[in-house]
Length: 353
Image: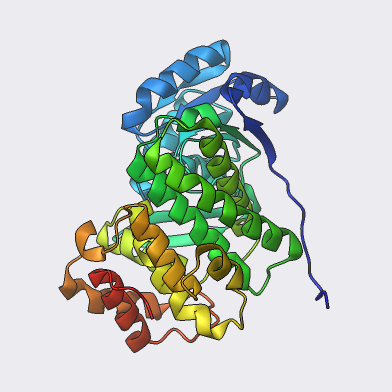
């Protein structure tokens, strides 16, 4: 029987295809804006400046200081540049770091956002902003955080390194995983999450073998859109809490941390969600969602151990304490002993279950 649900409706305009970067100037104009601050990380500054040239007079300038985990100090610098240049919108070109900076500027200034993702991490369709200050990462949700336009250009992903291809895709799968059992899930987010799994299952092994496979790149980018949209309309739980703790308090890299945690957080909640994770088990095999994801990730050459990401075993107790201090709502009780055991398995990279 179909259960009652509320779905607020999709509000972000999405442009998806090959060569869609060319449509960005028209999208800025469509928003009624004419002074775009183009954002990127230092590594993608060249691409950001090329985009600013494409925007012509509609570009106010470039800020190429986006950093992982959206440090508040960087945001303050970017907001100062936004105001000094007389910008009226932001165009964010890059992965989660750049998308996060655009959101942080928007929520402080009311600026419209055009986001152009170049990875599969999938924060672009959400109303979620995670920011880091004082050694801790805090997360908030607000309609003002959700971008107005997202432009997906498959061509921009052709040069994405294999390692980041894999880890950012596993990051996206984590969005779908939590969406399956979120208390505010609905038929739309469930359908998107289900559709993403086989698309990633098809695409990722092909991209490991041939990163220039355009059809596989399109499948993966579509799956990332599905996962991002699903997370944008449901609550987060244990997986994202742990990723935020390890990133914000211990400086671990974002996508890699999601990739390592995913099988373990999935396995932790799997017994408590009454078969809701069955689509994952059916897609990836091994008789359970957690084990299936672990074997899939290992087959792709993904990082498997928190130990390899720079976390010390001596940090596990503190990480468990922080994670249980203000836990996100979760279908299985979040106990210190349970989380400490989960983190130990993720630290060692052992197969869950």
